[in-house]
Length: 147
Image (cartoon, rainbow, N blue to C red; front, side, top):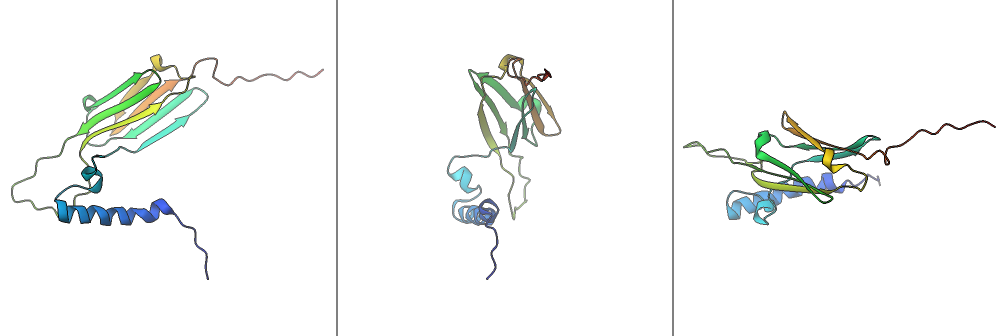
């Protein structure tokens, strides 16, 4: 008998595709996420350095004007909508894997974040948001004295 590691997320991807195909056959175009009202979510990386917090979201197919980034209190929210391309007459799809529709992602900012100094840029389908840390929160090097 051989032991192999179980990778639940990786193992569930084919199941998700099969369920999507089942919904398409019975409900028409769309996926289970759309049928349940979930829409789609862009992939997001969140990181931190001594200087600040960084959010990178992959949002291909949109323009910077299609994306709204806002902060209310300690909550940063990214909203947008990816519109479906018009189908050509006589075009029959065999597979549809790209997602369309509105999306929203929210993140709670730590107390050390200086939200008023947040900057956002959008290039090649990637939204980059940087939120600096307050001076008090930045790590400081303390010299150890020999006595």
